[in-house]
Amino acid sequence: MIKVNENYMKIQASYLFAEIAHRVSAYQEANPDAKIIRLGIGDVTEPLAPVVVAAMHKGVDDEAARESFRGYGPEQGYAFLREAIAENDFKARGIDISASEIFVSDGAKCDTANIQELFGDDITIAVPDPVYPVYVDTNVMAGRTGVAENGRYGKLVYLDSTKENGFVPNIPSEKVDLIYLCFPNNPTGATATKEQLQAWVDYAKANKSIILFDAAYEAFIRTPGIPHSIYECDGAKECAIEFRSFSKTAGFTGVRCGYTVVPEALMAYTKDGEAVALRPMWTRRQTTKFNGCSYITQCGAAAIYTEEGKAQIKATIDFYLENAKLIKTALTDLGFDVVGGSDSPYIWVNVKGDSWGFFDKLLKEANVVTTPGAGFGKAGEGYIRISAFNSRANVEEAIKRISKVLA
Ligand code: MLT
Image (cartoon, rainbow, N blue to C red; front, side, top):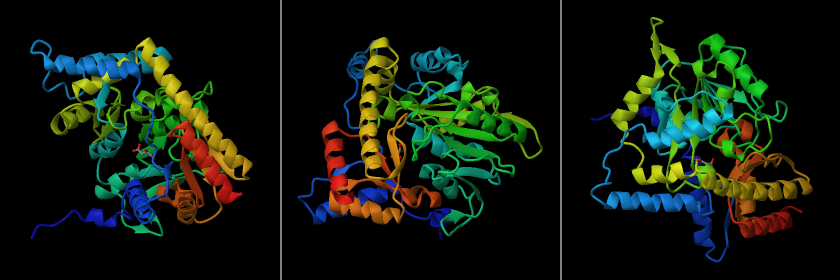
């Protein structure tokens, strides 16, 4: 009799966005005429930048000719892309990250999910609440969390992000080994200042902890002084892994590409206290389990680092940020307490009540899909998240409908 991994039985619910998709399609089936507007999952709607499309076409042409054909690529990503990343995302900001510390992948979701394989079974893990569900669920699958009671896993340390702390969690009083942080935050849209991030880095260094820093929404930062990378903080290369995504930055949700930075100086420890470098471990993991992101995709990703590419993707993000501003203003005018919506594509709305109930109300009465805050954790109850990823016409129509239902 073959046994299953019973940790899967501890997972509390189906994957949040799969559950929402399920509810929305059930509603659509029952109401075929409803013109549903989706402001739920943060999926982009605007087409790829022209430079990206041209570079991908060129990549296809390369694959079509014997002289330029490429088969398996380097698991860590092609040097042309890793060098462009190191130069533009880090050196240009005064951060010394080299191409050899960058691992190109098929997206930040997979990397944030897979990275926990590098760590021991018995480590203490701190997760923000509310939180992107992938961080928690992957640790549940790996057996590190214990069982859930009243919406919380016994062995996790929860870092509440609330109105009181400006949605930037306080540093725990106890020692934790692994800390997940995400700024600009998913789901709240909150940002952290350099001082706040530096305090986390100082804590991690003092406790020999590691920070997993998800910077997937970094490109939405417009306020000067807000850090784009954890490596802007002193000492972060000794205690942090950073995840980046081209999904929201350059519309790659369907194309799939992102990267992870594992600095050379980053160490974890054996149970005997011997230091082990994580970069070679991640290399080993990727070379064994991953065959690299496609050449064509990487050609497209590299194009966003050209001057033309930078201008084109900035224009698209500015467009989404304008959507976010419209949504934020409308909800504020309706009398709601709102966070996010600037430096972020997400608007976090205090609905002062059952968030799945509010989700259902907006779905049924306004035909607008949002994300219930409770799906991101216990501290998300009472909130909904609205995504600014949509066309202007849909955002304006959604605002009109929401205002009618909630006025
Ligand atoms: C979200 O809506 O939170 C994101 O789209 C999920 C993701 O990036 O995987």
